[in-house]
Image 1: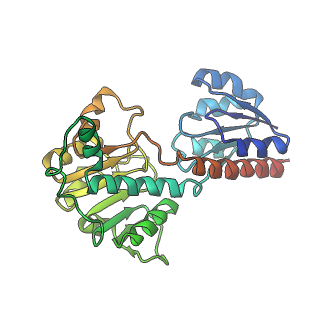
Image 2: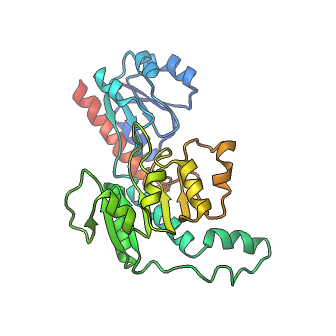
Image 3: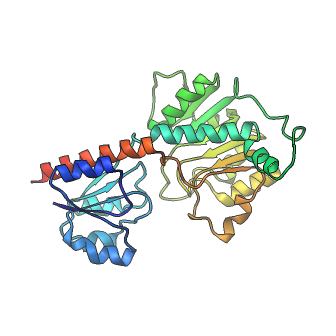
Length: 303
C-alpha cells in the first residue's frame, strides 16, 4: 500500500506506517500537483492545509482512504468520498487537551489584559492604572457551545477555576461533569464568557448579529473552533459597540487573514493566535499515533 502525507506527520506515526510495510510519500503539493500524483496512491493523509476535493477524489483511482490528522473535516469532501466507497478517518480526541488549554489561555489573557499590557510594557509604558480593572474568573459563568471532546476538556479546567459552567449541544443530553446542559438561548443569555467548540455549519453562522443581541452586555467570546463559525463582520460591530467586551480568536474565515479582516485583527479588544489550537508536540504525537494506527487497521481490513 502507498500513501501520500501532504501536510507532515510526527515521526512516531511515520514509524508505525513504515513498520506496517506502507510506502510513504511525505511531500507538500499544490492542488494541481496533488491531482497529478494521487492516481498512484491508495491513501492520503492531510491536516488542515490540503483540500481533498471532488476533483482530487476523482483523480485518486486507487484511493481506499482519506485520513485527517485532527478533528474537523471541513477540507475534505466527506459525502463524495463515502459515496465512492472511500473510508474517511480522523482523530476527534487527540488534540482536545491542547485546544481546550488554548481557549482557557485566551480567557486568562482577556480577563487580565495580558495581550495588551505585554505589548505596551515592551514599548516602555507602565500601564498599571489602565489594566488594574480586570476580572476574576471565579464565580463567572462560562458557556460552552459544543460539548464534545474539546468542550468537555474546557469544562474540566473551568470547573477547577471555580467557574459556573453551562453547555449547549443538541447531541448531548447528559453529562457526569458538574455542568448544566441548557438551550442555546439560555447559554447566550446567561454566559459571561462563551467559548465555541463546534464544526463549521454547511450554511450560515452559528454566531451572528441575532446571537450577539441575545448575549449579556459586555460578554466575552472565544473562538478556537473553526473559521466561519462566527460572522466576523457582526463580531466587529459588536466589539465596536461594546456589546462584546473582548474576543479571543484562533481561527479565521480566511487564513492567513486578508486585508478585509485587518480591522478585526487590529481591534484593541481582540486576543489573537494563528490557528494553533492543536499545534503542540504532545497533541501532534497523539494525533500521529492514532491516525497511523487507524490507517494500518483500515488497510488490513480492506484486503
